[in-house]
Image 1: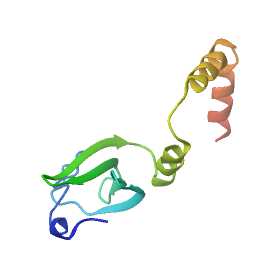
Image 2: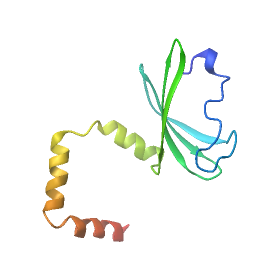
Image 3: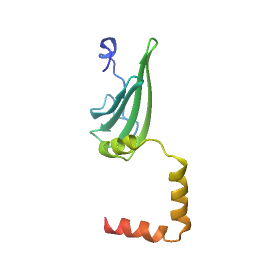
Length: 112
């Protein structure tokens, strides 16, 4: 929850893509933890998206934002999955080396 003293602040002053000042956005809370909040912000003008991590401390608010093409549901899915582990990387490498990776990738893209 946003502390009371910060509720009147304009946290993001312009869209980083279309540069619209004080842009209207759809903001969804993805995850809330004691360390901070993970938000999905979508500009209503250009539909670009940001994933923003916000944390609060005595000095104020710290924010880190990253442009993304993911929808909020996709961000939530990947965030809940947890961090990658060594086996994930080894499995991805095995798929690529197998030789069928490109064929599988192209099939999945064409079928969408």
